[in-house]
Length: 153
Image (cartoon, rainbow, N blue to C red; front, side, top):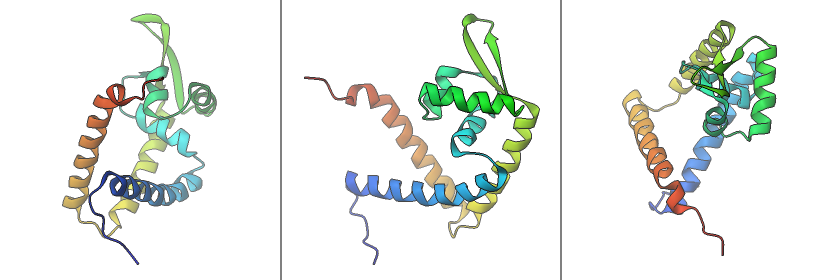
């Protein structure tokens, strides 16, 4: 039996968690078939934006601790999917880039994920609206994250 949400923050959190887990389960099958971990996919998807990204940014935006990110990127470099370069603007900083093989893998997986999500009984306009709402929520949460952090006593 499904209970309709009341619009409380607890309901929103429950719905977001449920949707994320169901979508992750759907995507996990695709990633498994492609031989790609969820962590590696998050890194590949971020690097597909282009321009190279500092490793600290990759860790933050892929929700990976720095040590885990280093292992994931090491594996991706070993597979020829990603490469690292020293940042010319700040030689202390390392940037990660998507290699051509990584771009091909990203495009193939992204197309499969898009096709899988398109199969859901959710019209395109609603899917776009949902994406816009989630983006707005994410931006608002990011903007207020520092202000909302608990203060140690």
